[in-house]
Length: 457
Image (cartoon, rainbow, N blue to C red; front, side):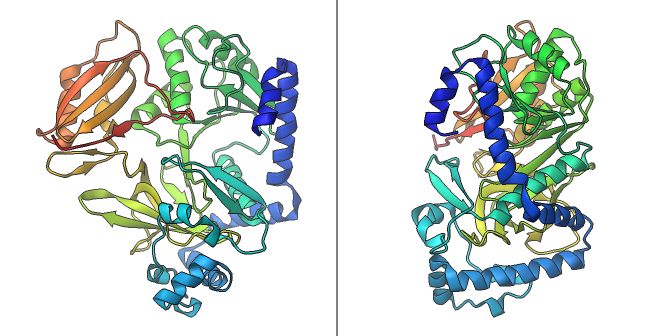
């Protein structure tokens, strides 16, 4: 909804708000899931799950060749780049040839976004994103790409036992009512998708009883949303000693890096496995966890590469190339995120499976000897009494671990936490523990596990 619509929404009574949410939901439903194109894409998504490596290579090689040709003929930025580097689509006939293309940085896209648009073509939708830098960017997306992205999520849910149209409870960054209004209800119903949108901004120890009762009444087949929001909900169940009166078939997380301590709390409370997925606002890749926990990259939406980084042994930089979005194509786009390779059926930079996705390149701590350490949340494993934790690093020699206790009387084994920290970082990086009541979320409601702004002392 745009700002004017939001102003009307917030001034309306709850009953009318529910109607407005559903009306907007039906509009989105038609845009996302209607028509023969969506049905054809959905069928192709299901079929592609069982493709052999040879079938995947053949499809991606052909689509990559076609996309490079399209860029040479129609996209001003790539017309300039290909002329300067002597690139022609006949040089790109297999996925391994993708390395012949230059890497595209986000800053370049932001500074020259108009040059990436196909002249005279109207987008099916505009995807507005500010990203981690806060710089606004409008991404033009064609109908095939948008509906493919929707179909990929539906198929991910289906693969974990959730049929299309089943009851969903969503905990994400939606502000269903002003944060200052602490009077229930704290959820609104989108009847178009049988989806109840819960506010993650109003949940606390005083309001939890309302959330619990509403979830028990609604009995969702699926919980979906930010890991931090669903973990917060699970922690309230754990602290009050009550169990949900419903058992979801699947819990789907997205938009934030899923941390191991969050997974443990969520799965312990709801007795249900968490199945994370990773997608991007640019619609250039989709990776969903299968039942074994491996992130499987769908071959239809794009080609994904993992490039090694200096001083980082496990994680590589994620580079993605669209195979569908002809309206504003991005080739070898540096997503700014990192991941770890799963033992794969193919060598080289192109990957089809990921063991873990670590998030932003800057979601690391750095040691005095220059090492960069990601996925530091393992230090909290096995330590009771922690509701949330965040690591701050403001200089190269010290970290502050901010801890929110599950209750004021909770005991935190600080020596065990310190030993675990130094086990992973070495003894040169000092640490201290700071107990706080709450860890602030970002303006979009997301949780950051690491905040790093390092400088030499």
